[in-house]
Length: 543
Image (tube, rainbow, N blue to C red; front, side, top):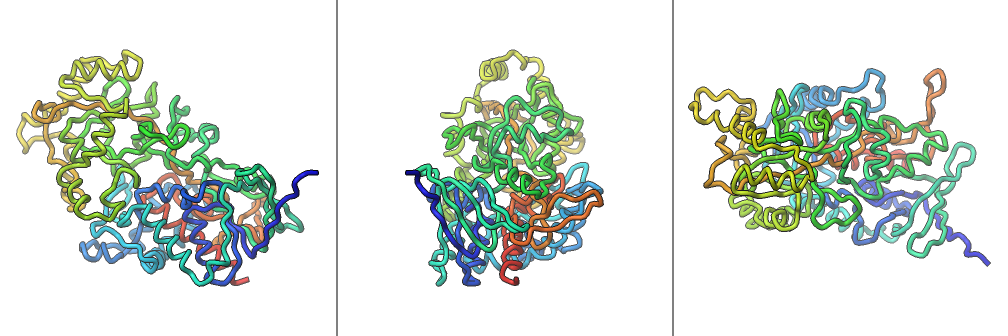
């Protein structure tokens, strides 16, 4: 006799226990709804990719901006967002969601602050723009505690709520499809992966909070943007391994509209994780501005040199123009200690642990633990005491003879020669951008003064072999401004929404199936995850 499906009942079922799912659960139990979260991962990983993140959040006219006398405003932020997004002319819902979000960041700031979440006093300035204007002022607010602390605070608030008993979290449960009747979802079918038994969740409303597709390299390659030519041979996974697009496919199967999956927020400076937690696991480095960013041959890409913090999409685009789509960063030990970092909670212990002394030590003395870890356990972090020896080791690491001593010497000497001409006649774009960056106090302490790279007192020389790292899906399940899933348009372009099916966070392309367009101003992912979840719950409890 076969095992029967286990049947669960609730007012609302949430698929996914990341930051969007947790936000939705908080708001639903606050309204005294009975809630089930279906979460594929183990309980220790509750919080998803947000828990591993750096924890930056995008706000306008914040307390931190005001303390630093940063003048900002919604209209200016909209101008920056729409410039950087380069929305397709036919895009409708993504633009609407961008406007809604930008007019609401103060509400999100208050919501997270009320949960005990605090921010580092200095606002970071990223995605300043290159050919397309980006953030005209600093807006990247670092959570004190990183994404790990953010999730910890939200879960603490959730578990201490008087209605917490209304919530049931089904860990190691995989949602696999919907049943639908009269255009309404009646249940979700799935597998309990702990014991390989089937289950059914029945409810009045259903929220998809499963993340995007960027943890599935097959889908990443399938939807690779045409502007980036063909996908690289190696793409590292910097996303969540359960962000596989399974539920996107199921939504399409029942007539829902999935859009803009070719729009992705990938990073250019990925390295294989020295201690991988999942297949193809990659780390996203914060590349030093003082390093030379070279192609697979050790040649400068241009005409504008590659430098972080201005336009991440541009970096990916330039590397993908090359015959072999990986790159090298050339630096020295002094640059590494001062500027090299990892984007995430794992190797930023001072902030993660809220230890101000440890954090200040990493600022003034460098993140010694990170550098020693890479030296010891990353084959893509190469050191040498001469250019000749460095080239030999670079080629051995890559298994090629692509880098020549002549090419690498030319790249380094071309840059270093600027410092022999006197400060008043420097004529180098990278030096100009380093000087520009150091004008802002938030970057000055983490960026060296412009100086020669090849100096023996700063040895060893370092080469880091870097790969494209898959991170975020900027497209997703199309939703209206109540986060209801929209169906595929008919021949007249008309659309209806599913009455009781919602998509939030990255699953919805952070709102509408693509609220960022081509580019993100950064810090916007966590904030839009919260915002879209709030909108879904507001509509559910108003019905």
